Length: 281
Ligand code: AFP
Image (cartoon, rainbow, N blue to C red; front, side, top):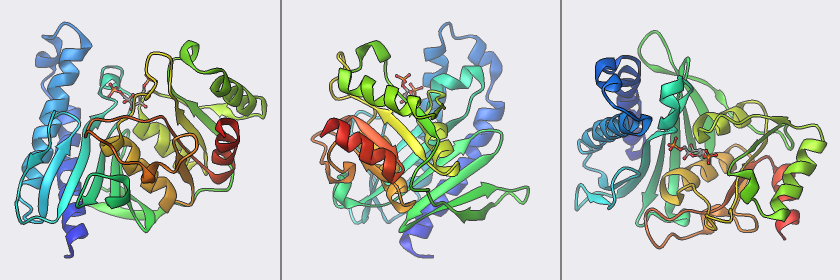
């Protein structure tokens, strides 16, 4: 097994454990919390713990950076890779039984867009699906054998039909509102669950479209985090023949100053990203 295969194999293994946790975690425990936030926090932390345990078994991992940890955690001084991950993205959707996901970015040297060498995400929906991006984007599905089976290579069309606009609309800048309105006027269908993993997965598998999470008045740097959300998905979209930009610049050319830094982001097919570039140009 080469290094990346070793990391992907750990991701497959821990995803089976997360699936079990999501399916059968103690409901009494969940009911004993008052607000959804507490329950989700418990689940987020449990998933984080499972992933940390799995990566700690790999001598090639130098450091892990989790959305749930304030700081990076050193694992092996002699390790080669830094793994940035969001253990359970969209966890506020567990309460309403919508799909959620885990996101992973594998970096050499620094958790920087240019140092990202591969990425992966897992969708926990009616089925468990894994997308691995390394040169190409490939879809796998957890089968009754208990293994992830290869399904197909993911290739975006030049243009899609779906539009997933994130952020609070009344806080959008005029330029963004005009862009989104124009896209809907051209017949695009709204697809937005509030979980970036299933929302982006849908765009990737239905041939294309646009997912946007722009700057807003109260959050000029937007919401989604570079190291464990934005860079990994930017890489997936590029490997699938699409593009990912912050409005003007390619997202994978950005360098965060802090591991929790965020950025406005647009992921999509080439035609839609071209429209974004022109609107924000
Ligand atoms: P949670 O993990 O808190 O549920 O947030 C999910 C998320 O980070 C991402 O998956 C969504 O795309 C985004 O937030 C949705 O945010 P809005 O509710 O502001 O559109």
